[in-house]
Length: 81
Image (cartoon, rainbow, N blue to C red):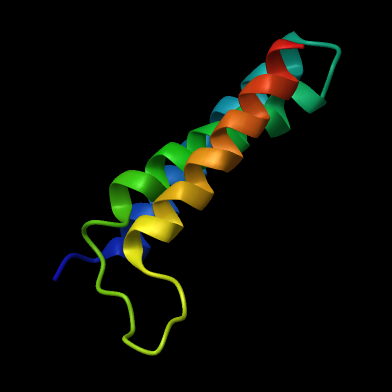
């Protein structure tokens, strides 16, 4: 088993630092939030295959992957428009 919570913490801190840097450079604070949504969604897709999900969950691994892909696409569309 991998310590996925530690991976997630490190990735969230790195994403937070990037968002702070983006917010200092741009007038629009929404760009940082959308970037973090995209950043963290990609990580969760990758991290999903290293973690062991409880058997009592309603959704399967591929359904969680689709949810994170939809979040990424939604943030990307809002970011680009």
